[in-house]
Image (cartoon, rainbow, N blue to C red; front, side):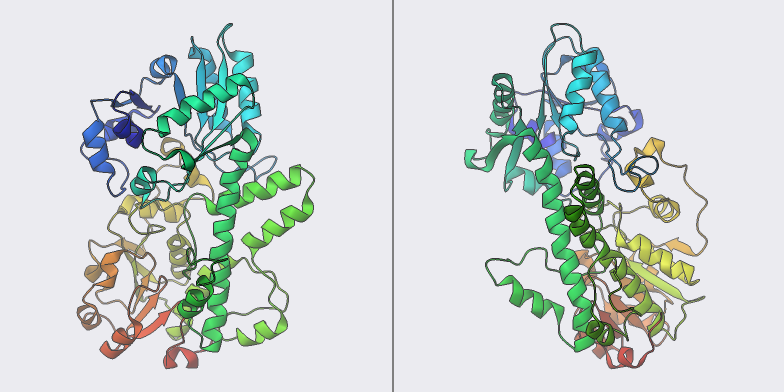
Length: 490
């Protein structure tokens, strides 16, 4: 909305939320989220044609176009629990729009929603709206990436708008297209029917998650054979049919979209009588079947049964924790482990589904003392994430559980050096640029010996760290001689 306000100065944009505290934060000098470039855009537009308000009904009633960006969490209970999207907040928003609208509205799905959601929303609006008030539903899924969101919005790969194939539907599509056309080249504005637009977002995230899981699966084989996953990924990515993006091996993917959207895709396939298609996408979440030869090759990394189905993303995080524990004489009990990075990726403070949560829980479960540093994540957020149940994170903050009692084994440091002081090992879990240029000789000097670095993002020069004296593990890279000799943990 801030970028639309920036590029369309004659259009009044009002962002509304039922949380007064959140609106107060958007009207302050300390925005409630971190995103490079966002502060500047908001400051340039706020008070001119960009406004933030908790007077939801008034501004919805006055609007011509209403973007709905409410949470669509995975259902935690009931029909479809663990897979289906919970549309409670969407339905609530639709009923409110119907109740306050006194003129025709274009209602835009901005949240990621299941295919055919628009059909359900149409029924709610049509049955609850006032006589003579018409509604058109559009799907306009968001393809930006956190950390590069402003850049992605200013120069998008594509803008996708789906609508009904009727005269009124085409007029609504054109109205929204005219907004984006102020700065987006026409050839990058794609128009489709409603269902294609809704499905495209789920499909895009599923394809991206598939690539990450594939290269992460390959990283285990690289470690077992002495291959370098970065070299393998580079060679594979030079194939023009494949390309180089999303081929960086890591401790695992995180964020609010990938796992949730694939689970949703599986559920939609099952509901539409397509079990074979559902089973295919389940394998992206659950992983791949490792034949006996792969089991033999990987036995020093992870205990696998032939043909056992592994959840690749969870497997990658478990494998990382196992490597930490096995390298440090099969126990981290009472040992301080520094965790550098808690956000799911650099240049954001978002911790939803971050791999750091599972890694920290694994270390805490083995009675390690964990000291965490992330430049954009608060201590309250760290403690909340480590205590929160599955799927709770995707509900509005005011509906999440109250802040839990602090976990005594966890502390949050103000910089990387403090986090690593007296630590036995350092785990790099987010690829923040500052972690590439730390004074690792200084860090080494303040650590217990032997000193370990476990690089879950491949951001450090392993050979330089070895010259300093570190024992280094990097995802998908040939193993340090020390690590080869250490027994695996089942």
